[in-house]
Image (cartoon, rainbow, N blue to C red; front, side):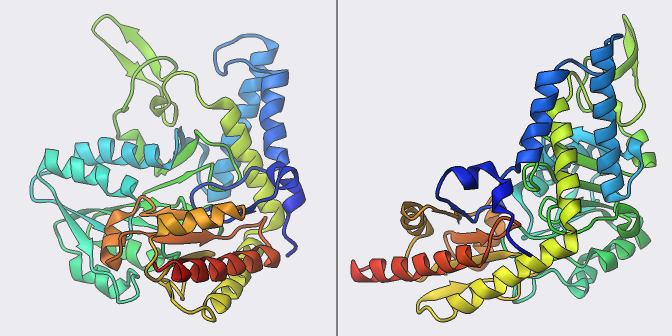
Length: 400
């Protein structure tokens, strides 16, 4: 696949090798134009106005939800708009977890999780008396089915696991794990923030109970995420927030709520963002997710082969399933190294990547992370490798 640089305005306006997609992707022109269409042609609220502009905005907003539902194989009523994946995962913990967990119950998580899939469950466990159980990671940092079986018990009520690690790029074998959890009567919450941008999702085939992803990692806008939940589960949950547009009837002593998904969407929704996310899905679907993943994998292999020729480089995930390279220049703190990259207009991430448990498991203070996407090409990889070589030589020369 040819890299689609011309479709991303930032790449045509400045010199940039962008390798931080795992944190946030760049935005193609057609997504920007779709959002500008809303602000320029029908910038009004949805669901409430009995006039032509509001009807148009509502129709576009409704179509966007249907596009997203179709994208993951869900029903329209099972797609809840949130502020992001973190917000969606918090919603699951603060509603389902708070309503169903009791003292002595167990929640299975892992050290691969993003903070937004550990911290909410930690807080709910403290309030309910439940206990967090961590899946032992394999030597390479993967979650295996056997390791999952070793912690699954009759006390397991919730399994909260990432679909793809945002640091290691590993795909969790959820197709085998989810049925095992269901056999114990547990529900499964899936963090799909790193899988939705890179591979097709089918929540029915996967049989996830809840699944969350965000717009800004898949060529969409910031400020919007998606929570999928099985309709029966969503219908049994109380809203997390209260206010306009989520209520059905309000009396002095209480109120009743709209059906799912609207009872979880208080106030003016992210209208432009929903339209932008739907357009991003159309964009990625037009490329084809098999093509996207093959392209990323080819770039990953090229980068890995190059890194193996450079002394003093440690790669922590040489068998990654997605286009993420997690590495360090030996003896150099990643924050120092990343500044060297920035001087050459190469943007990659340094730090703990909102996954401190994994960084501690790796026994390092932080790592460098390069992540490839549809707008990267072989020249980007070669530039990246050239800067790695020069950074390594520079820090060695000055005595790091």
